[in-house]
Amino acid sequence: MTTTLRQSTPTLALPWDRIIPWAVPAGLIVLWQILALVGLINSRVLPAPTDVVQAAIRLTLNGELFKHVGISAWRAGVGCLIGGGIGLFFGVLNGVSRPAELLTDGSIQMIRNIPHLALIPLVILWFGIDDTARIFLVVLGVFFPIYVNTFYGIRAIDPGLIEMGRVYGLNRRQLFSQVILPGALPSILVGLRYALGTMWLTLIVAETIAASSGIGYLAMNAREFMQTDVVVLAILLYALLGKLADSAVRWLEKVTIAWHPSQNLT
Amino acid sequence: MLYIENVHKQFDNGFLALEGIDLQIKPGEIVSLVGTSGCGKSTLLRIVAGLDFPTRGAALIDGEVVTRPHPKVGFIFQAARLMPWLTVAENVQFGLQGVSRLERQWRTEQVLQKVHLLNFAQTLPRQLSGGMAQRVAIARALVTQPDILLLDEPFSALDAFTRTQLQDHLLEIWATDRPTLLLVTHDIEEALVLSDRIIVLRPNPGRVHREMAIDLPHPRRRSSLEFQRLKDQLIGELDLSPAAPDLVER
Image (cartoon, rainbow over the protein chains, first blue to last red):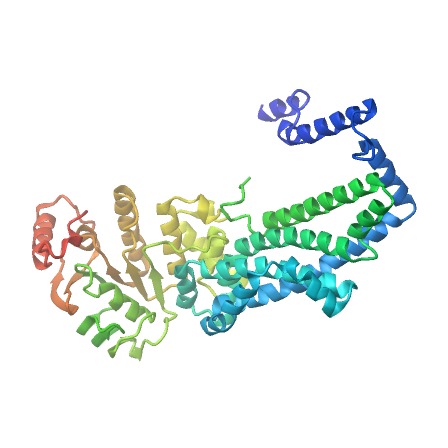
């Protein structure tokens, strides 16, 4: 009975929950296109969506797009891996060890309060304008959110659960893998989401200031030639990549911390 | 056999929680520790569990001084303390570190059946009610087939109906394997329903004030005259002056 009912409904009911969030952006694009066609928006100020699409096709066909996106993604990935790794390491270390916390946490908090983008002049002096400088900045940007959230996640674990581990004679390694790590994981993933935000932000700034490749360079170079369509395309690419990274973490949360109250059980 | 020999416990701040505690608990006996707050009853239980250490004296299980959690001892806390990322079955298996997979599964199934939660084996703790969560905690403690079960106010966070149910349930389970039960409780009725013997502790410093043997047959009717008489007697043994108002609830 119920199956026949369920089968008959989809023809009438579209998945509105999935469609509605797209209504506003889609409407804005349509409006934008119309205003550009009527000539109310100067294409030097803001090119029509179709122009941006054309720019995307042009750059895809001559290989430029993938080259720059690839390089940016590589910088972001390497920076994130190194910064995240260091952040995770210190977060775990200081989370489980009070002496380590006393020794390093104060210094880390001090450095955290320097806006890392303010270091750009210094970083250029140190590393010049090649990839090392940009990756260094990404590392700095990613380190802190991962560190802070890992540390907090470990400290926020219910001490009762850790005692449970002692009751059943878990050694330090087992305690870490069976209680501390899974307990801190939700917080670590929150840190990762913040970190990915800072990752793109840092990269955009670093690439627009001094670079000869990457999406930021693509935008700055296009500005020199007044190619507003390419500039807009570059901005959209950042938005897309940012969204993609965020979705990846959401997916990761879904598979690893389905038990957590932040996740809806199905 | 569980011996507690001349146990003293002084905390770092100088507070003398326990002084000269001597107890012997026979296998299969059900013993309750009652007393107003600060009498050291929970500390004493934690010493037996190997989670806390006496300043002097020792707890001995089968002639062996307890220095860390003993594998033959199960512990049930006031909160269920389930790992929220593990299913009910996995939480029960948490008690079975280093046992083969097949035996783990078999024993988990047996014990979940005992607490009537076999249908919830794959459920996550956040979907359980308080009473169910505590039954999982009981199952986790039982799955190692302990000789001694330590219970620290195990049902005090539950509503009155669930509490009564679980007390009866605990006795049912106890009747099959007859482990020693050592129970800390705030609840006088709970102590009277479950125990063969009630140890009354008094604070400042924590000492054994009195031992009461409870000879009533099981199941005990909470409304019987004899039960009420023992309850009055027990309340009299506790020092319930206004300075210690902690115990009158329930």
